[in-house]
Length: 140
Image (cartoon, one colour):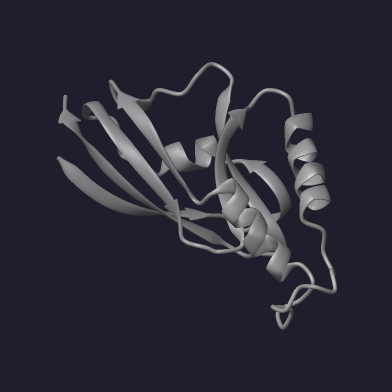
């Protein structure tokens, strides 16, 4: 069994945001015994990652480190028409990545105890984001 669905994320401010619940709510996994879901964030200035979901300082540390690695307003950026945050956002998106492939078992995502899905919003005003989810699996 295969299916695809588009997941709509609410707009968020710049930073790293735990979106696990928002993603799961929009995935019809209840009848999948075993399978995989591939998540593709359809944007070039945001990213997806899987990491610790318990301590909120992980989110702020991600933002701090990414801003240190890829600062805004550098004179060597050529792609600057959309603002100082745009080119750094593209680089951060490539560093984070825009896709995840996750296992499904007995109707739920099989994440580790402390794992959560994060959206890295790298623009100051990124707006609503979309994820294309492709699910393959054996029905229950």
